[in-house]
Length: 399
Image 1: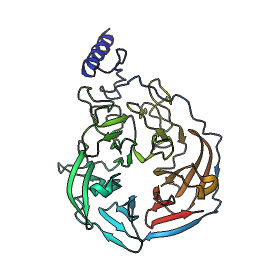
Image 2: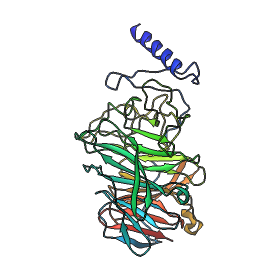
Image 3: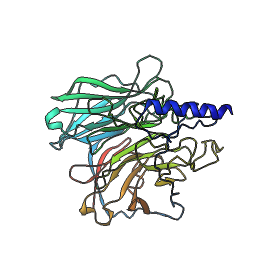
Image 4: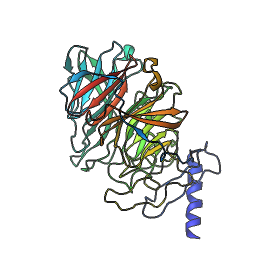
């Protein structure tokens, strides 16, 4: 009776805080092992269990050419292109560079970066109207408290290879000395909104299912850092209104599909359970309530892989490949590769290509097998595939 009364009261509170919600939108509190602030919003989610067991991984056919672009790098985490074709890329250690096709020039005035575990200087992206704004965006770990760090999103004006007018647009909290699951990738929506990811920072049972806490979410902001009025959690009491989805683990791949315009993400599972998801507003992607993975020790942390109100991925990996970077081939010069998804494997050191029929994976194939830990994959303004490899550099793949 007490639980029913609590559920009713929370439902009334939700309705009063967000009038545009329909009357049947309610909050569900999960067991005590998960945060008491867990919410499940009854939005439309994909409930189809993806078929993965019968899709073999084709060995590398080596029917392509790999060309070095920038060599001698330590950890090329993020890359993007200026309208003039110059490549800008990050080194996780806290350096930002511009490559003009001949040489790399370090970009000055990068903010202080908190380097710990998976945290450092991560992604970089260019404003869609860079010619008018000269603005770029960086994601990095920073420390405000001196007691650890967390993911930060900032914009800056790029002038003569220096960052000026740096503005912190979003700083996840709280700072923590844990070294895992910072995220963090960028993607621009068709509406000009900026999407970014922040991992759950090693707080599996606290952050992902709690809308009042950062971490384990994908976010959406305006280009100036303000919160779009149509974000799904605007008006919910104490919610992180920049959040667009929740129940994510550690998304290190994020893109806008060049044909459908959909935002898509890939994210690390634990031991098994890496996922690809189509990102929809307000959707709960289930971590850690549902998962196709197990603990690194081999023990189980959940007995279920599906739950009403939680979205199924369109694909998952068992065992994990440790996915980082995400791209869609949209260039006819690649022949039958065109339209495929590309995901880098940190663990197995190859680029995985997923042939698609709509949102279903029909075939898997290795590319660049053994090249090294694939930290990033992007398609450039020339339509070609670019990969960032830890301990090596940035390469172009043509066919």
